[in-house]
Length: 58
Image (cartoon, rainbow, N blue to C red; front, side, top):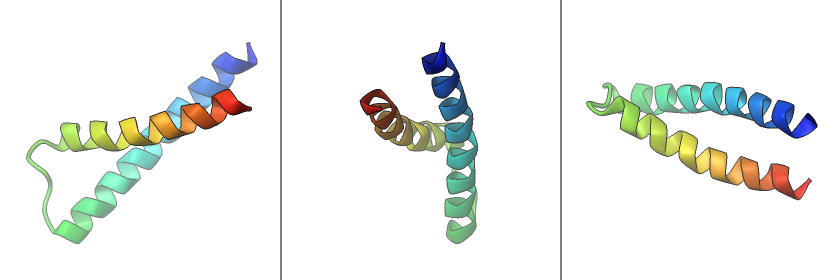
């Protein structure tokens, strides 16, 4: 049960952190990406793989 809660909270945190990172990249770039969803997917995938590996170790 605790695993489900941990992964759900992690998913929510990943979503908001990835969105913030993408916004920061776009602000520095000065324009939005054409394929914004693909860039978002790449960011959240990298973060998710790292974070879920950490969760499994605990």
